[in-house]
Image (cartoon, rainbow, N blue to C red; front, side):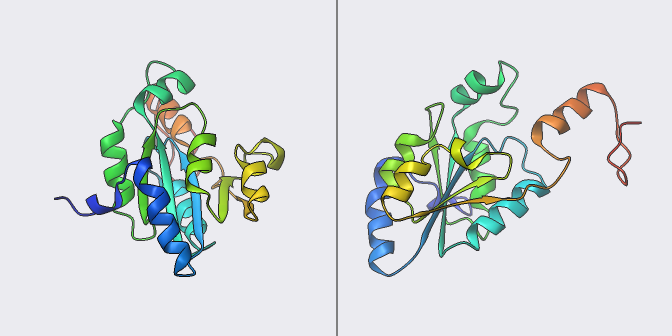
Length: 170
């Protein structure tokens, strides 16, 4: 068994896990994303998300959902590897994969206390917001690290190198 394997779960397991955590008075935080190439923006985002509660659940888009959302050249990293990397982060408690194009069903299954998205999402566009607030939960947006994303890294690799001090393509 690899380090962090016990953190990787199936969605069907999560209601029981979350119910047990809530019975212990734990605040469950949920976020989701592709996490194709883990970078410092992801690490800061996930760390900040974990600081919003006691337990962080991260749902990862499946390979097929990423292809539908981002095109046939993505993902660069298979979901099993993305989940392994995420599960190695100390502040991530549970990781699961989902195949839908949005996390609404996952959110309704888990019923988190806090739903987190990046500041690139307008509050009224956050999928699951209405459900979470109807259950008494909170929805929060976390600032992103400027000028870094997996898509921008992929584009820089395709078009040329960058100056590490200014992040400008040279």
